[in-house]
Amino acid sequence: MNNTPSDSYLDDLDPKEFIIIKRARVNNLKDVSVAIPRNKLVVITGLSGSGKSSLAFDTLFAEGQRMYVESLSSYARQFLGRMEKPEVDYIRGVSPAIAIEQRVNTRNPRSTVGTTTEIYDYLKLLFARIGTTYSP
Image 1 (cartoon, one colour):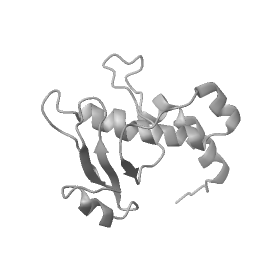
Image 2: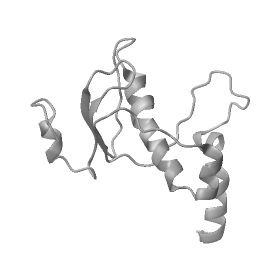
Image 3: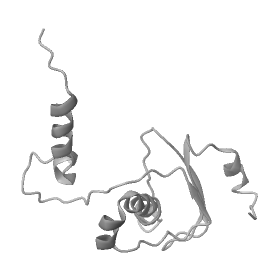
């Protein structure tokens, strides 16, 4: 791979510790290279039009969603269609991902990430099956 001096340090990073993106060219991103620490709270900030959403959603999330869809059975994938890789030279360390659209007017003010994504129902089943009752 032909590295430029500005992104050659990324080769030494472990994809288990960092999400590594080299030369992203999605929307208004112009050869952006970045290492994002895993298992940390990371915030992407910048001026309007600086590429925050292009990096977060159109690059990082798009790759995570593509990986998530690829992890599904071939039967389930036939209903979702093929997802294209984001325009990057290299991306490693991304886990399968889902994203929740930010909405101001939700139907239920007590909605959570779990209820919105419907993972809450699966968690209830999981805890009901393998949970151990504890009484002090």
